[in-house]
Image (tube, rainbow, N blue to C red; front, side):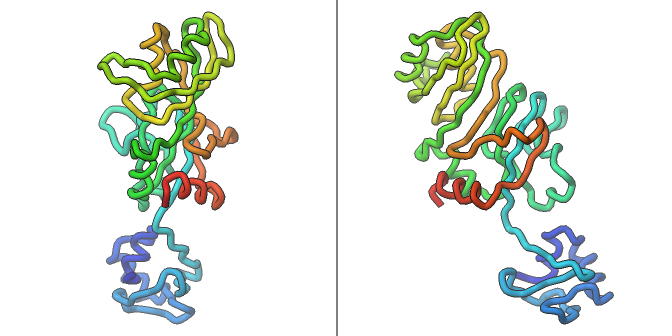
Length: 239
């Protein structure tokens, strides 16, 4: 990779600004000062420093976010805040995007990355990656609902869902449940309950595949995946 492209991608400025750093002798490759912006470097073998600080190159980034309500799962919007607006400025260089969507009023686990291939695999219907949700339901959820979800329910547009695994945590006027589905249709969890005459009044995603929401993450905060979680993610996506 060209040295100026590497430094620009890692947030050290525009290519013009990077060249100015080089002219001042601030950039070194393997301890040697470099002024040739077109120099090609091996990001795995060569050590690049700027003002003595080592440049750690990352092509891809993977973040787990605890999405709050009232924020869109989008990269930009003219009216509402998006999950990208919650990120630190230093993350802008990675051009991250949410993998799939959570409704504006839904909170919980959301993956953000710039790895398009991985995102495509995770969202592919062929992969059938399970997603688990916790919800409060207005109405008494019964074992009959559990059986209907296992068979798949007919949504308002005539679509028949794949089987969903419904666990009743509390059956009352306001029931509490966990639901695992392998699809991601628009408002799917809400529409599945509407199909059995009930309404979702609170919804939180707990997991995607084997990756669980880190409950230490406050709403609106995020962290990079650990190496172990990243390996799990790769296995889920089939990479």
